[in-house]
Image (cartoon, rainbow over all chains, first blue to last red; front, side, top):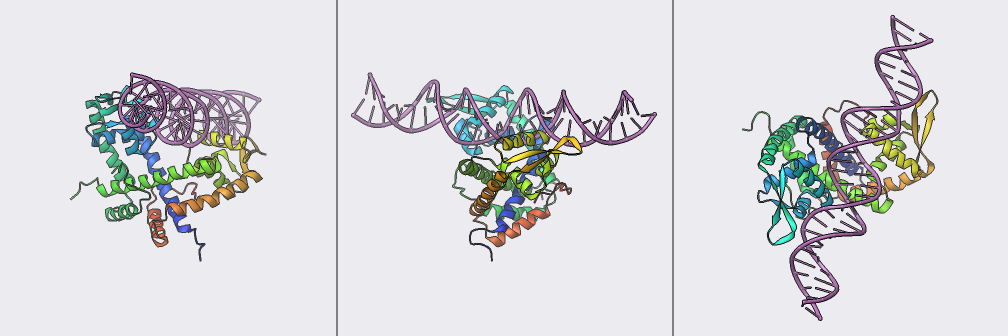
Length: 153
Length: 153
DNA sequence: TCAACTTAGTTCAAGCATGAAATTTATATG
DNA sequence: CATATAAATTTCATGCTTGAACTAAGTTGA
């Protein structure tokens, strides 16, 4: 019935996913700004560093977060200015640097992570836990070209 | 078992949705750039205008697309430069203007829309149609604070 | 009429994101 | 060793996005 290549159902799925993620992201952006005078990208960097307590190189950060190198440079610059992270020299390699959370960064992150989890539960409240679980599983299976890269989460 | 407010399953769901939408968006961005020397936001504007052939005001565009006014100004400026849309004066109201597709804009959009649909099918190929249908439906139900605004899609 | 308010849109500064070019340092290879 | 190549990061130009401030035009009502 449909053409060989094109399925309207996938397009519909994509539009739903996009709409949902935009909605949530916009709401989170606003809350991060108001509550913490911060942003989602900064939170993502802090979260990655929290998970890797030995620190991460700039290039590792950009792999884990799947964003460009230049992007990470800017975000880390601002986090350094704010005293939430530091760039530590790497002994064997003067090109590289290791980014680490400061104590302040770690405690800021703790606050933000608690709020983040609470907000997500609030914003996705229309999905009963069982359904959320199921949906997460279905979406996981389908992760495309997920060629075992950094594998965040 | 879980705390009253917080459910890990919703957080997991959110992270899946975010990951999937980032992956697709990044891929689409790259393809729009390479194939059409254009962007997703520009495509979104063209798509809205195609749907509303009488044209849309700036404020209507920003409502439909759920982005800020200033944002729409910039994107439309560039589309006007490229000759894909025009700003038409509104008879009764000298503050407003109606944005409309040009013939060129309409035919550019046709090309892009065909490719877009094809790409989505390719990128979401791991979801069989039935599953895509089902997932789309489940995600639809849950649309939060979807207070019957512009109702894109 | 005309001042107060509202509405439509633009401008602006800041931040995020990209890809390409440049810089600096490390590593090979002759 | 010396030079070529590769790797880690930064810089830069461009574009998207926001929220806040601003301009211009329409609307209201004393």
